[in-house]
Each structure stands twice: as structure tokens, then as C-alpha cells.
Image (cartoon, each protein chain N blue to C red):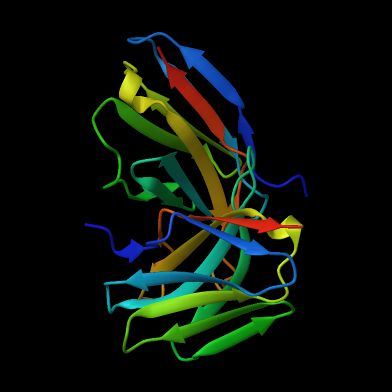
Length: 114
Length: 114
């Protein structure tokens, strides 16, 4: 298995632009998580899905952030409009319910908003 | 409100010696604890975990200890190797059969000197 795949690896965009981050979870995993990592706040959970359904989006910072999971193999995190304070590394992770060994993370997308 | 705290941002040890990384938590409902290791430009990878019904779990050079009364856990690495140099995150999962949400600490950067 190729693991959790995120794209792009790096994104530099201008303030006010729309940004879309993509994630392909491990096949068969039924949970998908979006995290953001910053120096100040560490790893924060933004939203997670179970069987493609959003379960908890309480970590989404503002209405500018939205996430979708149209099918079991794809999820997007969109920021519109982007702001410099959104600059961070965004991680996607997936896991399997039961027999729990934690999440498998992707390599992350480093977002820079200038 | 940080529910999982890693109070040491960094730790430096000599190769062959023991590394001890500490983590404190405030939520008594957490029932499962994990440690993740993160290299630069990669996502965190699962290292070791412990259930709240245990006080110790060992996997090779890595041992996690849990003190529930003190709401404290620690990761021991013996002997430490230069390849162990990474950021280590402590994480905790809330109670409940369907709760797979992890709360992370901010991480501790471990440097193992040859």
C-alpha cells in the first residue's frame, strides 16, 4: 500500500486566493482526519470523517475552511479566501476502526500564504 | 486549553544513554495514549501505545509508562541512537467505543549525539 497520499507537497499562494488540499487515504480505512501543525499550537484536529460522513468539525477555525469527502478514496480541504495566518503544515491521516493502532499520516502539505 | 502537554520543547542525549520524554494530560476521560515520531518533511509515524488499564508497555528499545493518578506518561528509549533524533508527539484518545479522535501535545525535539 502506498500509504496516505497528500497533494500538493508545497503550496505558495497570495492572500485572498482559494487553496485546495487533497488527500487519498489508505484503501479500506474508514476514518479520515485533517490536522494542522503550527509552532504555536502544535497539531490541531480540524475535522474528521467516518465512512465519508463528517463527524466532528469543531476544530475548523472559520467559515473560510471547508472539507469534503465525496467518496472513500478522496478528501479535500479548501480555504477560501486564504490569509497569511493560515500558513502551516496540513496533515491528512486515516485509520481503521477496531484493533486500534493509531493513525497513518500523510507527508503533509506545507502551505504558505503571502 | 491544552489537554495534552509536553513541557520540554527539546532534549539532547548522548548515544547509548537513556532518553526520557514526558507528557502530562488533564482530561481524566482519556483512555488510550500513543507516541508518534516525526522526521522533518514527513508525517508523524506511530511508535508505541498504551491502554489506560496498563501501566507499562514495551517494544524493543521503547517503553511507555503510564501513571494514571498523576495523569502522566513517559517514553523511555534505551539505548538511544542517532537515528532516534526526531520530534516526538504524545497523543491521547477520548473514551467511548466510537471515539477515535486524538489530541496531541506540541512535541519534544530529541537530539541524540554520536
